[in-house]
Every structure is written in C-alpha cells, then in structure tokens.
Length: 371
Image (tube, rainbow, N blue to C red; front, side, top):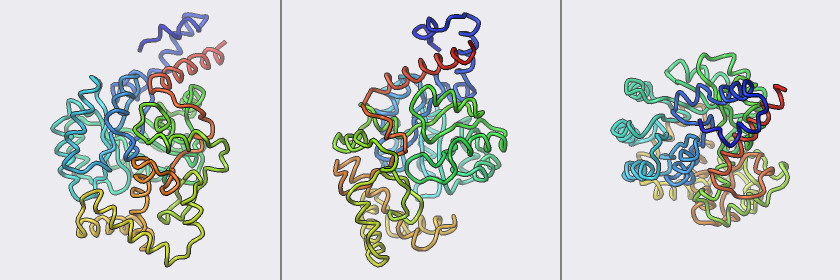
C-alpha cells in the first residue's frame, strides 16, 4: 500500500507501521485490493467506468450485471478489464433465468474477476462452481441470521448493511448489526450503511469488520454514470429526515430520498398500486429482455423467499423507477434510493479523491487514538 502521502502525518514511525497494518486487512488479502473499501453493485450505476475508477484508486468495485442484458455481460466485463489492470467483482442474481450463462462468463474470465456478490436466492451448485475456481463469494445481507446461512453454504465474506443504508434495508443500525454478525460468523465481515470517510472506516474496524462497503458515496462521484440532474438531487439533500424508509414502492422496506413520485405513491390506494406494478412489470420485461415465463419463474423465487403475493407483484417497480432516475435523468418521475449519508455529502468528487481522503483521514484518526 502506498502511504507516502500519509506517513508524514504520523509522528512516531512505530505507530505509523501499526496504523498501516491495521488498514491492510483481510479484505485486501481476499480481494487483492490496496485499501479495505468496496464499491457496491448498484444497478445502472456500477458500470465499467465506475468499477474501474474504484479499482484504479485502490478500492474494489463490483460490476452490476443484474441490470445488464445477458448478451451484454461479457462485453461489460471486458470493457471494465480494459480500463483497469486490477481484478474486480461481478454482482448478479443466481435465481434469475440466464444465471448459469452469467456464471459461465465469469468463470471464463476468472483472471479478471476476483469475486461475486449476490443477495437472495443463492444457488448451492453455482456457489460450488465459483469456490472450485477460487473466486471469492461475498453476499450482502441485512440480518445476522442471513449472514449465518450465507456462510453455511459457502460465503467467504459477508457485507452486512445496517438500516442507515440506501435501497432495500433492515431496521437494525450498523453499530449493532455489524458487531453482532462479527461475533456470529467465522468469515470476514464488511460493514455497510452510513459510511463516507476515514472516521467511518476506523469505526468499522473497531466493530470488528475488515473494511467498509459504500453505495451512495460512490454514486455521488464524478465517475458515476448517473445523470447529473439526479446527482444534483442527492447533493441538495441536507437532512436525514428527507431520506426515509417506505413500503410504497415494492411492498418491502426501501430507503429513498423524498421526491414527487414517492409522495404520489404513498397517497395512492391498493388498486392503483397494483396497476402501477403491472405496468412496471411489463416495462421491466422489455428492459431486461425477460419473457413472461422468465418473469413468472423469478416471481416464484420471490414467493419462496417469503414475500407476499403483493410484494412479488410489486418487485418490478424498483428497477424500472431507478432507471427512470439514474439513466433517463428524470428524478421527479423515478425513485431516488440512497443512504442517510447522502445528507452529509455536499459535493461530487472523483473516486480517486474520495478513497485517498478516506485513507488519509483513517491514518490521522489512528494516530490520534494511539498518541
């Protein structure tokens, strides 16, 4: 790890060496990155340019294959590899139609892909294939019991997101769920939900985590492909009360920034909500290229995963409305998923600037704590 810019800030050489060792964690060893910082796989956001920028800055980025048509996944992996000489990760749903094809592509390019991430519906056979190839398995969970299950079927590390995080989230805060999970599993734990700086990284390490994972912070960078009209909405948020958890979008707890669409959705009745979901389900089919049969198969997985019929029907809302905001640049008409940390970020910087600032501040905090 290159620490020439920060070692001078540490007054004692011995303490400097100790600080460097603390910041070179198991996460760095597992994924081959310089710094224990992960850029999460946000659909429509974690595209080759952002992933490569993260990796080039010393972090580890995950390519969001979930929202990339299957026939374009290999090209996206190759494009990412053309922009960085570092290995990176790929995120996809193992239960969706075509998942085997994506797994084949990842295995074909295992010299470029160091890890895969996933959420619900893990497939034991697919996991076994990745483990045999030496590709790290790093699922994201929102509950300790889910982390325990993930480890039982092969996870090499787990990202644990506290309720402060954006998108689908739980109710337990990061400061509770991360230490709890660290004590419950025997693999490295990465903390997510509420992180943006070096103080947060040191706090996560104190909880027992091996690093941090950030979505909102990387979305709010100059390297992010998100439309500027949408980025400006994130920058303008200055109060965590404006970043709330709602069930109005897809029937599950989802942390979003307040906007015109959310106000409309929360005021509509059940019948209009279901009609809205049907319309978005059809649009989702066109965006992803999935057939009606494919959609029904995916819906069955959601039902088996404990979702109600209404939640299953509404599940297509999120990706369609994210695309409306992030891709089309219409933040008033789409959804604005984001963590509470958005209220503490008031400017857009490059991934390089963000990661270097985190590492420099982390060194300074460690120095202050050991003096």
